[in-house]
Each structure stands twice: as C-alpha cells, then as structure tokens.
Image (cartoon, rainbow, N blue to C red; front, side, top):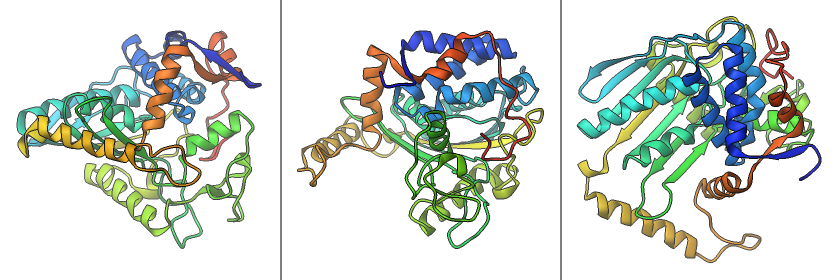
Length: 354
C-alpha cells in the first residue's frame, strides 16, 4: 500500500469503529449501524464519510451532543406524508430508522414524503437511497449541513454542502444510485485530503481572503457546483429538510464543531415512489436496465475508457474492497486499535476545524 495507508478487512474495520462508539457511550445497536454505514462509505472509496469521522463522532457522543437513548417516533401527517422525530439520536441510526417508516408508507400508498427532524450528521445519502431501491422503490433524499458555502456572487458562507441523492431499481445488477453534494466537493473530501496531507484542486474552495486554494488546511469557504445552479439546489435542500420541518436553515444551522455538548437539530427528507403505481414494475426495471446498457455501449470520449453510470465506480470499488480490504489512513487505523476514545480536539472549533 501507499505510505500512510493500511488495507483493513471490512468486518474488522466495522468492529473497530463500533467498539470505539460503544466506548464513547453509544448503545450497541446504534453503534453497529453507524459503523456499518461508515464501512460502506470507506469501501466505496468515499473516505470523507468513513473512518475520518470516527474521532469527531466519539468526542460528540462522549460530551453529550448525541442523545444516547432517543425516543424515535413517527407522526403520520397525511395519507402519504409523515415526520420522524429523531430526538437527536445518532444520525446514521435515526435516519436509517426514518427510512424504514418511509419504505413502509411508500409500499402502502405508492408515495412517501417523510421528513426526519432533530437528527445528527447522517453520513452518506447513497446508503439510504440504495436501500430503498433494493425494495423496488424510486427514491430521492436530501439533508442539511453546516453553513460552509459562499453563495454565487456572495462573500460570506451561508448554506451547507446540502447533498441530494437519487436511486432506481433495474432488472439486473445493482440499483442505479447517484449521490452529490451541491458544492464542487463535499467538506469531507477536504478532511480526507487533510488526513493524507494531499493538495486539493483550486476549484473546490477559497481561503480566508476569498482566493482559490489548493491547501486543504487553508480552506475557509466551499464553492457551489455550477455557480448559480448549485446555489439554487442547496437552497432547495434547506427549504425541504429545514424550513418545512420547522428547523433552522442556512446560516442558522448548527455548526458541527461549535459546541459538542449541544444537540444538532438537523433535518433529512425522503421522497419515495412505488413504480407499480405508474407502470408495470418488470417493464420499468427493464427500461432502466436498457438505459444503463446503452450508456455503457456508447463510444467513450477521448481520455475515457468507457461511459460509467453515476455512482458506478464507487460500486465497483466497494465490491473490490469488501473482498480484498479497505484502504484506511494508517494514523486513523492506529487510533481505532488504541484505547483512546477521542482526542478532545474538535469542541469549540469553527466549521473548518483541523
């Protein structure tokens, strides 16, 4: 392996993370789901949402910023609408439970528009929509994040990276899954670059003076994807996953690091649809499959080996990693194996904390 990177068995990695969360105070069921989610992210090669988050999560759990015994309830507000009250439990666990309610409703009525209110940082959205597609549902998901993005034409941070994800089942192979931040890159990608001491492209972010930077440690503002288009999409996410759930929005969303003793009160939103309510399910999945095959068969542009589906390379990496081992920064792996629960380093720092 490259210097500073260790190859780790997937089950070992999941167990190490689970044990760290339990040591911080999380219940085993909640710790196991969180660790499973982070293992999925690292296996996909999306290291920004994997082990790099463990020390921060452990510190927040230990300091009271996560409800260790959340009373998660579902409030049905209409035939196909509802709100999951997350009680500020661990984000991955709460949002996975929330998805259970949404899947059940979509199968019953054909449509589910379900908000999850008062949750913590929920990780990688593709994890959730992939689950919905495996239940033969089409899914959209979106969630809030820290105000870290300079809006198009602005000079101060206002919105978060506010990701959006989509999935659909197909007749063969894995579901079609697409997951994107509404910024050029997610903040976690910068964190991953920091952990590996690697430069970032100068199109990702700006420094404290508003100038493009390649130094991940100098980042003080992220940039929206495609300028005003990304700006509009991140606004949509805050309206759906924030304002519509009675939660803070934009610059009022709680910072990840500001006070680790306080709950975060974040929102996530699911829209799930049953294709059977619109068309024949088998025919639908075959049409999606045909689309993907036609894209695969298209002659690639110069410099590309083939046309991939959105998210497909992550799926390929995950299969290989689950079979052969997952790349983890050696420093993080050593921490996971140690008796140290956390490093007491994040509390009180700004959004761009080291």
